[in-house]
Image (cartoon, rainbow, N blue to C red; front, side, top):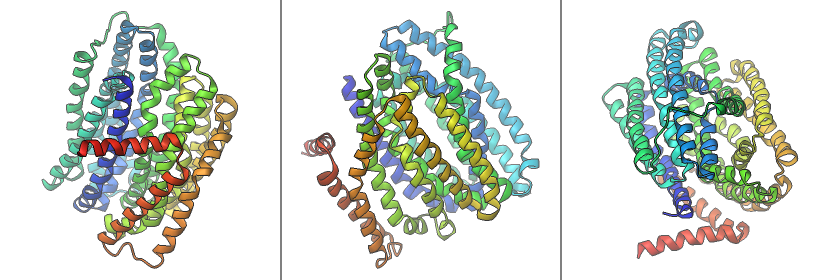
Length: 508
């Protein structure tokens, strides 16, 4: 299949995966929450956050793989690609060993850290969870190298096929473990089994279909210094992510309880859903952006890509966010139960500030391709440190909402204000034109939001699932029609009409 078709099919399959990833939790999560229980769910989230710190041992190398593979591929240097593969597999094998050691050390010190927020049985169980998750992560590092090779070669169909398989199989395996009575430990073991299955699926494809064999002799040692220099600030970005999201749960585990972590975890779950919705387009563009920068594409072309993708992302994010504001509270009561009603406000104070980076994440690919991500990483690090300190001060008084509020304010300052100035003055992206486009597109979301909230004053959408789904469907249809006829440009209308023509063609 040609590259444009691979790209187009990859985007379509990404949204299929997103649809499955959104629909499956609709049925899976309520069952999982009830079978697992609030405390056990909070314990699982805390263990995931603690183990997440071990991902820092990769030193930010994950984001560099695609960059260097794309560079060698642009030069048609197959030997260079294979040597880079060998280099990263060797590095990640060492990282895997460090992860196993680090996981054992972390699991040995949970009692002095969490004795205030966790009970004795919870401390015993979290030790087991951390050790299993550490093994899971150790396996994931070699898998990521082969996955990056597939993305660098723009074989999105195969990559998304595996992702769709994982999206469907993971919750099925988790439910089997829960019904057998293995609780959080069983779910963690099921996740590890998925990783064991994924490794050969990626590795065999790279060798058999792409014809690439990692070379462990004559590896490009001269690149190590360059790669480490590039990865340093990506590594700082990884620290920032940990400080923003994982540390919030750790602080709640220290100062509050597993129940507080569970409520917070449900709230921030929507962040990952919105992020996946946003990166479905921008994620497949990283190799293309890297090649554009390498070929000295003018800043006007980079701005055009930034704006074109941002408009598409905003069309989706504005629909999802305004819909969540209108229906989110009713949905959470029906979906997770009354014990998780505070999750709505936690979600809201993080999702609204997160909208800006989600419609501008093509800028991340651009600054990384330009090797100008130093400032971004250092800025985020400073903001993240402030977020951690403020979270520690606010949690004793406001609990999970205080943690979410601190993260939201930090996002507004760092990604909403500072990075927009940087994109404009240093990267050369036409930010004023970008926001002019976004403001023009905001009429429909604003009208729909006000109308939806007005209707919600008279209609109890949380009365039953039928009323809730009817409201969501009607809202989506009206919003989509308004966007298509009022705010979409010719390019965006072409995407929508083209998709409908293909659907109708295959339906005949």
